[in-house]
Length: 123
Image 1: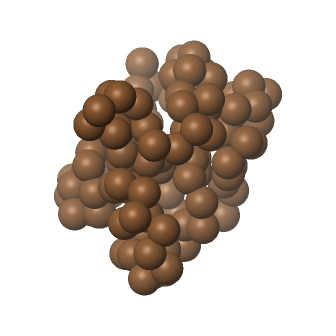
Image 2: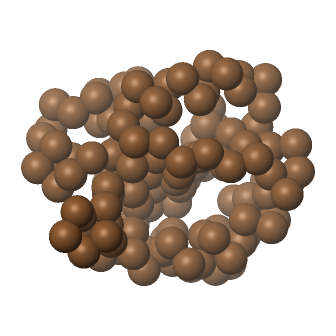
Protein backbone atom coordinates (compact mmCIF):
# COMPACT_ATOMS: atom_id res chain seq x y z
CA UNK A 1 0.00 0.00 0.00
CA UNK A 2 1.19 3.50 -0.85
CA UNK A 3 2.31 5.83 1.92
CA UNK A 4 -0.40 8.37 2.81
CA UNK A 5 -0.36 11.91 4.20
CA UNK A 6 -3.12 14.32 5.15
CA UNK A 7 -2.15 17.99 5.12
CA UNK A 8 -3.91 21.26 5.87
CA UNK A 9 -3.02 24.12 3.58
CA UNK A 10 -0.43 25.05 1.01
CA UNK A 11 2.66 25.18 3.23
CA UNK A 12 2.15 21.66 4.59
CA UNK A 13 1.58 20.39 1.05
CA UNK A 14 4.81 21.96 -0.19
CA UNK A 15 6.71 20.34 2.68
CA UNK A 16 5.40 16.86 1.76
CA UNK A 17 6.13 17.45 -1.95
CA UNK A 18 9.74 18.45 -1.19
CA UNK A 19 10.27 15.53 1.20
CA UNK A 20 9.00 13.06 -1.43
CA UNK A 21 10.28 14.65 -4.64
CA UNK A 22 11.68 11.38 -5.97
CA UNK A 23 8.33 9.55 -5.63
CA UNK A 24 5.24 9.41 -7.78
CA UNK A 25 2.78 11.72 -5.97
CA UNK A 26 -1.00 11.58 -6.20
CA UNK A 27 -2.75 14.53 -4.59
CA UNK A 28 -6.41 14.97 -3.72
CA UNK A 29 -7.47 18.55 -3.06
CA UNK A 30 -10.68 19.03 -1.11
CA UNK A 31 -12.43 21.55 1.09
CA UNK A 32 -11.41 21.54 4.74
CA UNK A 33 -13.75 20.08 7.33
CA UNK A 34 -16.38 22.35 8.82
CA UNK A 35 -15.78 22.56 12.57
CA UNK A 36 -19.48 22.17 13.40
CA UNK A 37 -20.24 19.13 11.21
CA UNK A 38 -16.81 17.53 10.90
CA UNK A 39 -17.40 17.14 7.15
CA UNK A 40 -16.01 19.10 4.24
CA UNK A 41 -17.95 22.23 3.29
CA UNK A 42 -17.75 20.93 -0.30
CA UNK A 43 -20.56 18.47 -1.17
CA UNK A 44 -18.69 17.09 -4.21
CA UNK A 45 -15.72 16.35 -1.93
CA UNK A 46 -17.91 14.45 0.53
CA UNK A 47 -19.32 12.42 -2.37
CA UNK A 48 -15.88 11.65 -3.87
CA UNK A 49 -14.06 10.69 -0.66
CA UNK A 50 -15.36 7.10 -0.34
CA UNK A 51 -14.75 6.36 -4.04
CA UNK A 52 -11.19 7.65 -3.88
CA UNK A 53 -10.47 5.87 -0.59
CA UNK A 54 -11.80 2.61 -2.05
CA UNK A 55 -9.41 2.94 -5.00
CA UNK A 56 -6.25 3.69 -3.01
CA UNK A 57 -5.39 0.00 -3.35
CA UNK A 58 -4.66 0.68 -7.05
CA UNK A 59 -1.84 3.13 -6.31
CA UNK A 60 1.61 1.58 -6.76
CA UNK A 61 3.19 0.66 -3.41
CA UNK A 62 6.14 2.95 -4.15
CA UNK A 63 3.89 6.00 -4.69
CA UNK A 64 2.66 8.61 -2.20
CA UNK A 65 -0.97 9.71 -1.72
CA UNK A 66 -1.60 13.15 -0.21
CA UNK A 67 -5.01 14.42 0.84
CA UNK A 68 -4.68 18.20 0.93
CA UNK A 69 -7.38 20.32 2.57
CA UNK A 70 -7.46 23.70 0.81
CA UNK A 71 -9.08 25.71 3.59
CA UNK A 72 -12.54 27.01 4.36
CA UNK A 73 -15.02 28.09 1.70
CA UNK A 74 -14.25 31.85 1.79
CA UNK A 75 -10.51 31.17 1.45
CA UNK A 76 -11.06 28.75 -1.45
CA UNK A 77 -13.43 31.14 -3.28
CA UNK A 78 -10.85 33.94 -3.25
CA UNK A 79 -9.54 34.06 -6.86
CA UNK A 80 -6.12 35.05 -5.53
CA UNK A 81 -5.61 32.06 -3.26
CA UNK A 82 -2.26 30.30 -3.58
CA UNK A 83 -3.71 26.99 -4.82
CA UNK A 84 -5.19 28.78 -7.83
CA UNK A 85 -2.06 30.88 -8.49
CA UNK A 86 0.57 28.12 -8.16
CA UNK A 87 1.80 27.36 -11.73
CA UNK A 88 2.35 23.67 -10.86
CA UNK A 89 -1.16 23.16 -9.45
CA UNK A 90 -3.44 25.56 -11.37
CA UNK A 91 -6.46 24.44 -9.35
CA UNK A 92 -9.85 25.61 -10.56
CA UNK A 93 -12.16 23.50 -8.42
CA UNK A 94 -12.42 21.01 -5.60
CA UNK A 95 -12.28 18.14 -5.45
CA UNK A 96 -9.34 17.75 -7.80
CA UNK A 97 -7.31 14.55 -8.01
CA UNK A 98 -4.02 14.59 -9.90
CA UNK A 99 -0.64 13.04 -10.31
CA UNK A 100 1.80 15.80 -9.41
CA UNK A 101 3.78 17.06 -12.39
CA UNK A 102 1.49 15.39 -14.96
CA UNK A 103 -1.32 17.01 -16.96
CA UNK A 104 -3.96 14.38 -16.21
CA UNK A 105 -6.44 15.32 -13.51
CA UNK A 106 -9.96 14.61 -12.38
CA UNK A 107 -12.16 17.49 -11.31
CA UNK A 108 -15.43 17.80 -9.38
CA UNK A 109 -17.88 14.99 -10.26
CA UNK A 110 -15.15 13.07 -12.14
CA UNK A 111 -13.60 12.33 -8.73
CA UNK A 112 -16.69 10.32 -7.82
CA UNK A 113 -16.39 8.11 -10.93
CA UNK A 114 -14.93 4.79 -9.82
CA UNK A 115 -13.49 3.89 -13.23
CA UNK A 116 -11.85 7.27 -13.80
CA UNK A 117 -10.24 7.26 -10.35
CA UNK A 118 -8.93 3.73 -10.84
CA UNK A 119 -7.55 4.66 -14.29
CA UNK A 120 -5.72 7.72 -12.92
CA UNK A 121 -4.14 5.70 -10.11
CA UNK A 122 -2.93 3.02 -12.52
CA UNK A 123 -1.17 5.39 -14.93
